[in-house]
Image (cartoon, rainbow, N blue to C red; front, side):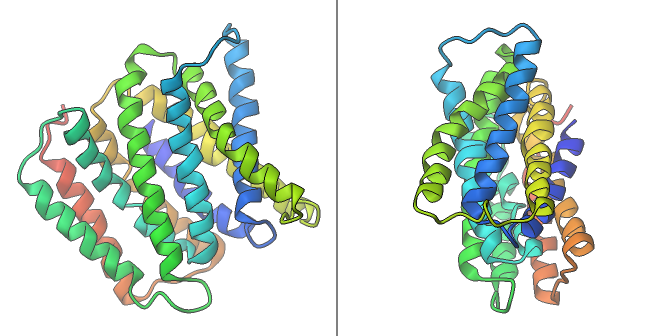
Length: 282
């Protein structure tokens, strides 16, 4: 399930870059959250869930991701190359391992410090010489901040998932994201800072597709799987997201990687694997 979720998030990275050719980051963010809320809400109701006062913890879960994480990522990928964004998502694993050790008291070894140092070094290499038509240091930094928010979600989901129906968790999670998306995307529409009225049907359909591949499918898979494995192991498997994302960016967007960026990507993915490999995975 986590491998499939990683593939969805990786593909969504490349598709987001294409959709942003005609949409603003807030347009895309609003589409992602609305698609997720409608689809997951309908699924929860069809399974017998009834509207009630939502849990503040679940709302906080959605506020972290897709809320804060997605809006930061959409602005980040708007300002940087899709390949950069994909590789820098590797930092989520490092953040997840660190937060799991700190907040969930999951066991770690001294190698974590080495992994974190290697991950930082790899991120610097990816962002080095980030000029050019499709990349920028600002965009790269926003993606790393999005990874931190996503790591907070991964750890919090592990804490509450064992006690909750994953469909209900995912549906209420979207309500938390709507609390962020509604004022941001709605405000941009009110002030006329939107491209939703001028984008063609193809790009609007692509935004809906991003919503499905970035929210509905992967969150259902993740919230189901994380109830059965430690957050650190989940973080290790999510290191596959940048691999899928970089491959999709090269295939869909037609981007290429420089030698330094490729080396940085390899280093940060290796650091993520090292960070999680010292924990009991059985």
